[in-house]
Length: 342
Image (cartoon, rainbow, N blue to C red; front, side, top):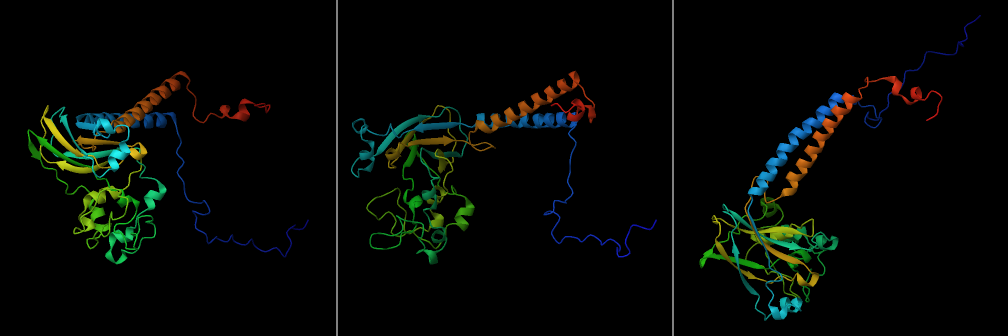
């Protein structure tokens, strides 16, 4: 019998290599770990052993933080104006000075951070977030760039507003002053903003112009003789919050506050949160290595760590009660049901 291969058949052509990279052809080497019971138990146990101490340390640090929180949006409205808070806050003739006394619960090591906290204020609203001009904030040469700033882009006569937009227009304008035994406590308002913001987002040649000059005043006014890079209250406010409840740094008290000291706080209640049923709070707080008071972080670590330890113990018990040989083919579906009934 002759060879079945025809004489015209030549040697097989070598397979051509594709010009596409291996990652697009899914030919990259891959690690496929074999999850044995020992590896699974060890992994869960290690996560639990690491996370639980971190959670305990975080909760301990949070517990050491001393906070004084005072909500004043209702208390600082006179009794006769409680039924029409909006009219009171919008009036230019009403006295909005409010004096209250706060007691220091525990010794507070300086610096003591002063925050204002707003609730039900949606700084993350899409139109609000976009209502600014970063180019205008950075450089004097771009002060006429007000594309996204309407309705606070120009004045009624067409003059450019610097800084423009609703974020700057709604700048928080409540003020706080503090005293102990009739002695004024100095509030340090330097270095309350991010250094990167001061250096790269707000120009030292950009000065406020025509700001809060319209018929409706949104918030605080700015000193036209100070560049935006030095107006730290504005810089702090312009870093918009992601949630409707947020705190922003107002200043610092550099001295220690002793337990049971009586702090006299004078509040200028100017900011209108009553139109949208918002809340305002004054917060005095110390800090720790995790920052301010935050029980969530420690609780999350403890929860995850405890759950992992529980699963590790559960897998150990399950393996001891019902051991099985690794890779036993009898557990395959076609071997457990040879007749094809599943």
